[in-house]
Image (tube, rainbow, N blue to C red):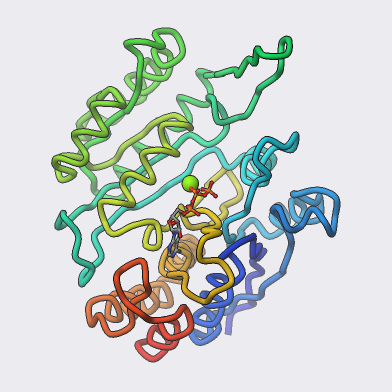
Length: 334
Ligand code: ATP
Ligand code: MG
């Protein structure tokens, strides 16, 4: 048996501990050579450590190079930057990769959706660089750099090339934000020239929203800056049945952190009702990233089987199963 690889596990807030426990049960049942190092982050962690992102957590992820993370909550209007933003910045996880794929057996308005959202993770309005100029006047800074824009564009095109995808669409608002989004587009175009076999196009973000709900099959890989990526990720999740289904990876040069697209879902937290599929699919992405392909396929196939049979189905997909029932079904299907 190979020497086990250590993964930092961050439960997070809200439904985080529930979907994480479910996912770890499946990983244990798979008997993959992984060890888990539990660390804290998020809103609940503040009471214990006085911060939503303890140094020990960042240190653990840097040392292990890989983390599996539940959603972390934020304190609205508080002075503290969110743990998510902090983790992405301090670990330099510059890209968010979110495959959005129809799940067999889950009926929605669309069939055969197969999109990849690539979101820049470190700058734009989402960096939270805000200050009060005088009471009643607030300034929020949108920083766009050539370096970050080029890096995310290259990531998107390389992902397309590696995975046999045909087209990269840059999503922007350069008609209004001519300088900032203009720079983003310049960088994407430049990188695109290095990938002649991949089609490149640009769509303005508001139009993109309409096009996606009209016909998502026209798109393949979507690349965009941070805030647009936040919003379009949720929109795309809606195309395939909601946030309970869409996984994600935050990837840097040396480190990767796998987490679902959804938030802490306070409305259903602590009730055992959450759909763990999104975090489970994130764990599948992690297994692939760790080159544990056999375990990844077994996990993925079990999830597909349970969804297509439709017997164990959580409330977000119209069923009555608990997180535990669903997880039992996945383990039985392995
Ligand atoms: P955040 O600011 O943390 O992103 P949010 O306000 O965007 O939070 P989410 O926590 O993402 O909200 O949840 C949005 C809706 O989707 C809620 O109604 C929530 O119950 C539902 N939801 C999210 N994740 C899941 C899940 N895993 N299973 C079932 N329902 C979910
Ligand atoms: Mg959200």
